[in-house]
Amino acid sequence: MDQAEPIRLQKFLAERGVASRRAAEQMIAAGRVQVNGKTVTDMGVKIVPERDRVLVDGAEPPAPPQLRYILLHKPTGYICSVRDEKGRRTVLDLVPAAQRLYPVGRLDYDTSGLLLLTNDGALTHALLHPSRQVEKTYWAETEAVPDESGLQRLRRGVYLSDGKTAPAKARIVKRLPDGAVVELTIHEGRNRQVRRMMEAINCPVRRLKRVSVAFLTLEGLPLGGWRELSPEEVARLSAYVRQETPKRR
Ligand code: URA
Image (cartoon, rainbow, N blue to C red; front, side, top):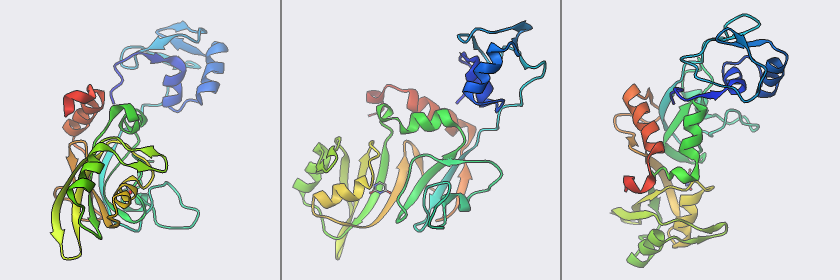
């Protein structure tokens, strides 16, 4: 996300990799930091990175890291962590390693589909924050065909061990000889939520794929493929998470 807003000096220094936030506070208190030619020792000072000139020990802090946004079509068989103690493959094995990127949320080892990876901590935080209600759509191949009352239960919210789910959008995409493909749109992010919701209506999931997040889809991306988001998509995503949620519906 852009940084046209004022931010605390110690946060700015930490984001530029000068020091941790606490160590940056000590540097400020020690009189080592100047803003626009004046030494600043007050902790409350805010700056606008594009406007104000900050020097630490007389030198400019390093340039901000380039923000990157990758949309990955995750195959099953990869975990969504930076490292795995069991030595399993991680989603980072699928994307270029030039910069440290982090998955935005998680898909299970046995789930495929759309996963964002970025080093933009502010956008990640916003996308995952429950108040933003970011819509995620899944296609679940189930072992039974849900009836209308099952679909209604998904739409109203079902009771799971960690409480009732928020209302979801649910519809049958396709009937199969031994089950169905069900499209489910949720905005919560509980552990194995879709699988548990479908189990709650007696339709266990055989295969699960996330087909969209907000307005982003997998269109044109083969399994295991990735692409950078365009600047327009990044701007739209930032606007999406800032929007009043009811207006999206
Ligand atoms: N719900 C699940 O059950 N699994 C996922 O990976 C994502 C959502």
